[in-house]
Amino acid sequence: MAFLADSLKRIKPSATIAVTDKARALKAAGRDVIGLGAGEPDFDTPDNIKDAAVAAIKRGETKYTAIDGIPQLKEAIVAKFKRENGLDYKPSQVSVGTGGKQVLFNALMATLNPGDEVIIPAPYWVSYPDIVLLAGATPVPVATRMEDGFKMKPAALEKAITKNTKWLIFNSPSNPTGSAYTRAEIKALTDVLVKHPHVWVLTDDMYEHLVYDDFQFSTPAQVEPALYERTLTLNGVSKAYCMTGWRIGYAAGPEMLIKAMATLQSQSTTNPNAIAQWASVEALNGPQDFIPKHNAIFKERRDLVVAMLNQANGIKCPKPEGAFYVYPSCAGTMGRKAPSGRTLATDEDFVTELLEAEGVAVVQGAAFGLGPAFRISYATSTTVLEEACRRIQRFCGNLL
Ligand SMILES: Cc1ncc(COP(=O)(O)O)c(C=O)c1O
Image (cartoon, rainbow, N blue to C red; front, side, top):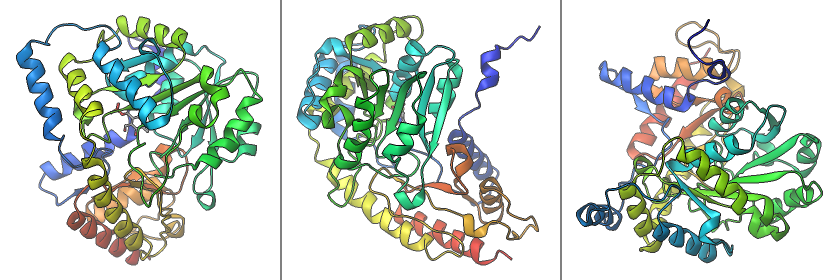
């Protein structure tokens, strides 16, 4: 009899974390490696947020808290949804977890049965299909096209819906493409969903604040109030507030679902870290002025990376609206020979050979369900990005 659970056979370790680990190991072995795999801002957590955590420790906020969030944080989240999204929630409709990832995990685990289907536009964040699989349900990827800005068309959504569809997972701005849906584009999708009352929407708004060129962020429950009763709006402090290590994420939606998620969490991690919750109260209620400052820097980096990648032989890189990722196609390099003598047949070959030849770590499109392409995280300094792009240009230029 096997010792490990069968459910584990359905999932794989996160590819993005694997690349980061590989780059770290090569670096430790003395190789000159530039890691562009990590999905986190390079900026430090702002001081006012750190100070709030220190104050919480000194006040003795070091005990268990309410399972799905302290009242002060729930109030701050309610105020955030009202202020930034025009959405009305009660504190009892809010769930706080150990990162957006746990909140997503809770929502899917609390709702999915074998046979249920979850529509996931591809390319997608690596965790969506794996959590669906772990829950015993079926991910239904819907391929998008680079020509459409990697955005799902209403007809493609309509076609993917069956009587077994339970959720659509929607993510804008997107990890891994950075593409973001306009209000009109979201409305076109919600018009489809309105006709299918059994389909719920899990909208992952984690990159809400990371948008450029005056892009206006919108979220489904705001665009189509008729979907409010079947939408879970997920967000967190990791990306916008540079708090990836603090592990606080949250969501708001119908009370029945929020309660079920709390039951699940009560039997796994209990409450999210008390100190990090107090820091998040400050993040949401405190000054927000560093966000546009960070965005100005991210935008400059995005423009630099897009321009330099489009000068690389065989690479085509669209300019996305948000997040800190670009998702260039490497279709033009397929069938060519790398310096090692190996022929590039997949995007996995492309990233492996790039790491070997030039010491640049990126993540293969295969991990995100649409290729041949790769993801670059540009959350690192301009100097490093310039050097990385020069190496990619050289790698592509040297292909035979
Ligand atoms: C699209 C998306 N959603 C959710 C998360 C989870 O973030 P966290 O668990 O740090 O809150 C991430 C992190 O990479 C992400 O890229």
